[in-house]
Image (cartoon, rainbow, N blue to C red; front, top):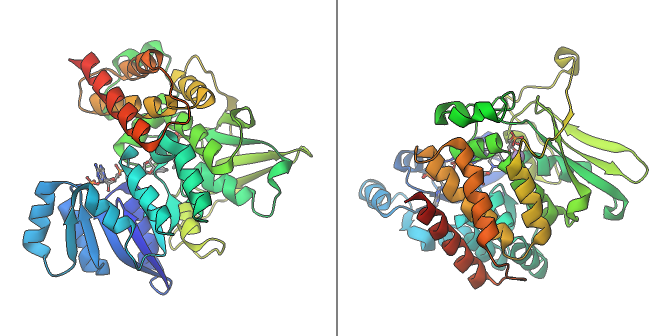
Length: 382
Ligand SMILES: NC(=O)C1=CN([C@@H]2O[C@H](COP(=O)(O)OP(=O)(O)OC[C@H]3O[C@@H](n4cnc5c(N)ncnc54)[C@H](OP(=O)(O)O)[C@@H]3O)[C@@H](O)[C@H]2O)C=CC1
Ligand SMILES: CC(=O)[C@@H](O)[C@H](O)COP(=O)(O)O
Ligand SMILES: [Mn+2]
């Protein structure tokens, strides 16, 4: 039996992780979970899985849950609560499915406690990839990818020697506005941006897909997970999201992982690795029915956020922290109707330009840069 702590149980990845756990109760036991402020989701998960520990980040939501559910589980609050879930003594594995760099410290604490990490929370790797991977090496802890592209690459690399990799190729759907010109992006709405063509996901990542920052974050995530230089990481437009990513080897062979878009597949692979189990209800891919798959080179002028991410990744140091924090603030401002879609990339560009890079930043440096960048973006909004 594998004991699991789940950070972000009320989100898109969190709920699908609960589905995976529920479908294989003989293999998994949910021992602890966290939510941000979604009390209803917490109550449902407590009733369904009887976890020992539940963390609620928001204090008002914490009080509401405790008033009703005290005694059914130990209920804790705030950032400390998130860490308590990440380090639950009985947990073998921590699934990190929170959104944003809030996931960084709990991930580090879980690594220090020797937990295997299944990581969906890409912002943690973008903002402090060197610290997270160094800690994982030091504590001999596996970082198992959940993000679909990274899971695909991880699957393609099973049994392969890292030195034989020519490059990895991340596929990108192009997001909600892939068929619009830059001119047409001027007046797009939040509602339109939230309509991803292939995936149903949380709001932040759906906007990131539309700006292509999602792929930029994924390039940096891949750099850390697979320890490859940026020159060996490519992005390829693929509108169907069926080829989840590819690896090209020195002998010119390419290995790809394919499947219908269903996040339960990579989530479950991280939970069962190196085994594979049936994903109950998953739609099987029939290529004869699909008929054609499309691939196209990325236009970096059209998708400027992807360019910013490559530049920030290559320059390194504290610049990816700036990229991530500026993006989180800008996307939140867009989602709340404060700025237009194209302002997202403008704000990020300004934040990157004004920053003096700190090389090999410590955790304290990262915290400080993250906070400064958020303040800087807010100052541009007032
Ligand atoms: N959705 C997807 O298909 C994919 C997502 N990812 C990555 O996985 C991560 C999660 O994405 P997704 O599930 O879509 O996001 P959602 O927005 O659906 O869920 C986010 C989760 O994080 C919690 N949360 C938000 N803010 C805080 C906070 N301050 N403190 C503690 N918890 C908080 C939310 O709680 P609450 O709702 O209760 O407030 C919720 O449980 C992201 O990093 C994303 O990039 C990667 C690949 C695919
Ligand atoms: C499901 C998943 O992993 C997302 O990150 C998805 O890849 C988003 O798709 P695009 O960023 O390619 O639009
Ligand atoms: Mn992805």
